[in-house]
Image (cartoon, rainbow, N blue to C red; front, side, top):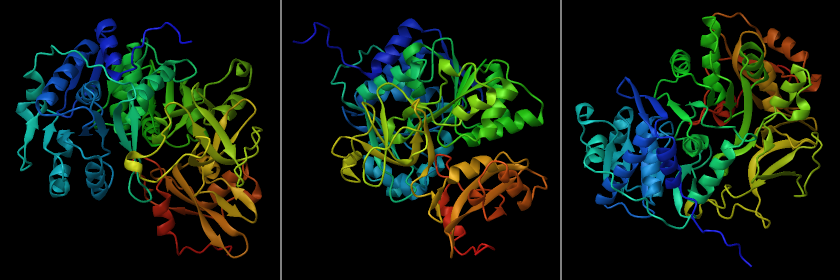
Length: 542
C-alpha cells in the first residue's frame, strides 16, 4: 500500500522559486569582476535565472545538454546555477586552476555546448579555443560596456542575452533524477573524472546543509562563500542558502586576507566557508593588524585537515566556532561535520578541541565505515584505522561516461581513498590518504598528524610531510615547511616542538625549508610534486 501523498519532484528550480517568493528581499552581495560591489536579491536572481533559461532555449539548449562555466563566485554565476539546471540542462563548473590540457580534456569529455566565462578567464579560453571541439559559443559574464576584444568565434554578452528576455517563464517539471550539474575531480593522477549530480541528490543535500547537525544554515545567516563555486558546487551553499533564504556574500576574485576581512565586516557575515590555506591568509592579516571579527559566529573548514593551531585561534582567540567538515566531489560533497554533542558542554577547551580536530560525525543520509585489508569492517573504537568507505543518496554511483569502471562494491559502498578511524561517538578522523601514509619499521605514521603538529611551531606558516626511503626503517618522515616572513625558526626548533606531542618513532628525521609549497587546483598540498622534487633526497639518518 502506498501513501496518499502528492508526488512532486525534488527539483533545483523549486529552491530559487521558493526563495524568490518567500525571501525575495534578502540580499545577494558580490565583489564583481568589473570592480564595484554588486547588490541584488533572491527575487531578481529568480527572475534573471528564468530569463537566462529563455535565452539558452533560443540558442538551442535542450534537456541534458552540458553548459560550462569558468567563473568566480558572484551573482551571475549563481543565476547560471539555477537557470541552467532549472531548465533541465547540466551546469558544468570548470576549475580554472587546472592545467590547460586538463581544462580542454574535460570540456571535450563533457561535450559542453556553450561556456560561460568571466572576464578574467577570456585569455585562458582564447588559448584553448583550437582544442575545444564541440563548443558552439562563449558567453562572457559582463555587460556590453566591458565586453573584451577577442578572436573567439560566436562571442556573446551575458547581460545582452538576459535583458532581451521578459522572464515570463514557468520552470519545467521533469524526473527528479534528471542530471543537474557536473563536477570533475582535480585529477592529481590521470585525467579528471566527472561526478554527475541529480536534482534529487542536490535538494536532499541542501536539506542536510540546513540542519543544525549539518552546517546549520538558516535565514538568519549572512554567508561568505569563499569555497569556489567551481569546487564541488561551493559545498552546496548556494542551494542551501536559497532553500532557507540566507544572505549570500561572494568575494569574486579577491580572496586575500584584507579583502575577505573587509567584506566580512561590511556585510555582517555570520558564517564563512573555505579551505585552510584561505583562513591562514585571513588570520595572518587579522593578527598583523590586531583586528577582531564583529559578527562572525562560525566557520566551516574543509578540503583538507584543519590544523589544531588554526582551530584554537578561531575558537580561543576570536570566539568563532569551527565546524570541521569532510567530503569530496564524489559525496556532493558533505559527508561529516564536526559539531559537538550536548555531552561535550562541560569538557575543557582542550578536550573540546581534541574533538574538533576530527572530521566529525556523519550527517543523516550518509553511511560510513572503515575496513581492513581483508575488506571486513573494523571496530569503531577510535584506535583501529582502515580504508574509509561511504554510501548514501548523494554519493556517486559511478563516474561520467563510465570512466574508472565500477566504483562500488557489491554492497554499494564507495571507497574514498582515505584512511581513518571512527570513535564510539561516531566521530571520524582522517589519518591519511592511503597513498600518503608513511610505513616505518612496521608502524604507520600519519603525515597529516605530523603536519598539523608542525604548524603549531612558532614561525611555521605551512608544512607538508612525505615519506623518504630508509635502509633500516623502510620509510621515514621528512617535513617540508614554509617560514613566516623574516622568522628565524630552525630545523631543531621544529623537531623540539614536535617532541612535546609526538612519540619518538613518529618524529621526522629532517626538516627542509622552502619558499612555497605546491598545491592542487583545489588548494590541497600536491604531494606527488613534492615526492618528485625530493626523490633523490637522502636522510642524514640513512
